[in-house]
Image (cartoon, rainbow, N blue to C red):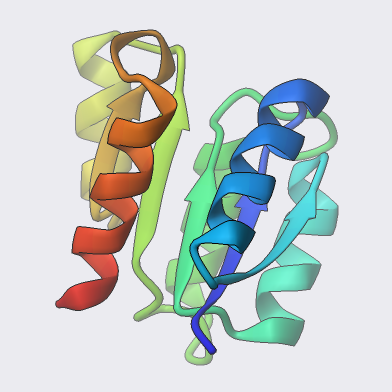
Length: 122
């Protein structure tokens, strides 16, 4: 079963997206902060990480950087799901190795799920 880790501090969005992805047949685990998210990623070695950038304890930029520095997690695809729209933020996470960058406000839930499916098909 395909494993997804969702690191998101907004409880409603986290629950809703996790529920939808589980209905699609994915094994989804979630964390509310960057530290717990990184631990979960190292433990689970998921097929995909959905990562917010503004997180308590450790921001998404740092989580991504640490993932890329670790031999065991450096090749896991990461989809950034955030409300940060600045060009600098987009460039920074792509340089750090994010696979996709989505601004939450610009996408409906079903569109996000479709993008996740496409990423996992590759």
